[in-house]
Image 1 (cartoon, rainbow, N blue to C red):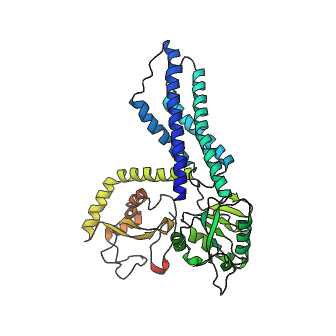
Image 2 (cartoon, rainbow, N blue to C red; image 1 turned 90 degrees about the vertical axis):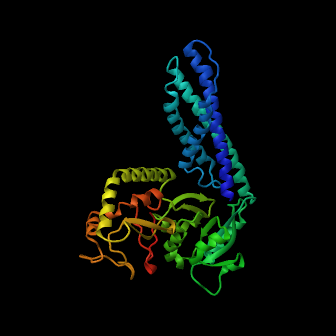
Image 3 (cartoon, rainbow, N blue to C red; image 1 turned 180 degrees about the vertical axis):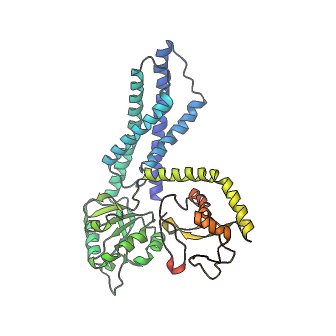
Length: 405
């Protein structure tokens, strides 16, 4: 809830900054640029196109800021990083707007294009960055003075967890961590952390604990004897919308599993479980949607032929579906053209074999050519799967495989 409110503040001021910039820039073009070319003054006509642009252009900027990852961590912003991000996004967006909307303006000479580009760049950056740096400065001050804190769970229960807890609590400049409990990795009779915060149970139940206790931050400070469990812990945390931090001596163990984001004060490193930057995630999803729609359109005649063939070959539905496990451990229904006789798996799923009597004649052809899997473009369109990524496995009891896309 705190994160949503903070992002709402940033988004509101970013929207107003973009609207103000474009409104003033539009007036400048009509008052200062066009009359020079025409040789006479023209009335400033704020028609419907102007008001539509005041809505559409700011939305364009919000999309760019979203793709840059600016709204991902609203309480953990560096003013230096904020300066660089704002500058690059502004330059990129202004170039797009300039070539789409400004390049065909009536100008007396090409130096006016340089003036307009420079003015638009300056106004967009200034109007965007100044409110941002003010909001970030106020927020950081509230965090550092412990006026703003976040429910935090410690993963670890003994020496290292206690040492880290004491160090963080004794700092004059707070990191904003409000430890409300801990979870243990290896079960013991007593835990040193119980002297400081409540014991919430085993790390095995961490996903349920995070949801029930409204955890926003997780700190991993496990003992050397527990290091073999680090991969298990990271997998348990995958997909949770929480910030995860570790002590520096665990850095080497996490290389290749996560992307290091930043150092929080001296004792903690923040990690980002998403290896891909936000803009790459957006681009990947765009191509998933675009190529899925294109494939479904181009394959529609083939879909019709296969549907008729499946229906004629044996009794039963044309489409077969069953449960798979996808991203964030989320189950979903995967769709295929039915290649087996109805009730072939009534005793449970089994691997197919050569001359499998369960498979229909048309099913053998479809499986050989992979045409039975073409309806999965619908799963990609829905976001259950991706065109590129690990294959989601079947949910088969103890063989339940937890995969990403």
